[in-house]
Length: 74
Image (cartoon, rainbow, N blue to C red; front, side):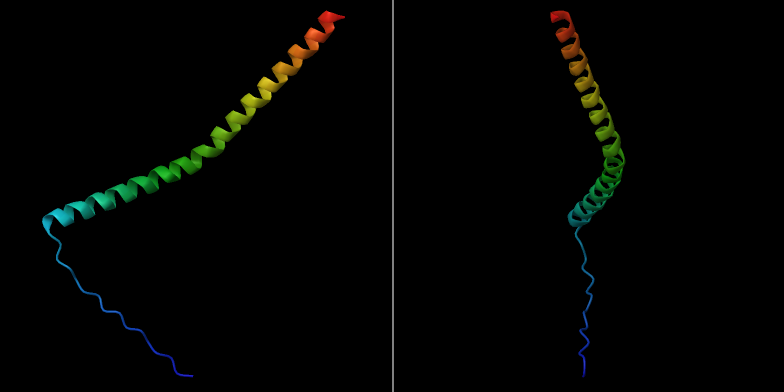
């Protein structure tokens, strides 16, 4: 079975100074987003841990208060 090879031609395009500036901004913003995304990915597990720990603590406090109120009523 014969296969065809697709050849793609790369043409260099001369960018205007304004286009070069926009491309520089795009590159810079892309790098910043990637760096911040990496940091966010690192931070999210810690945030979830603190959030869950606080929720557990609040639940324990509520349960303790509920038990104390029952004991005071008796």
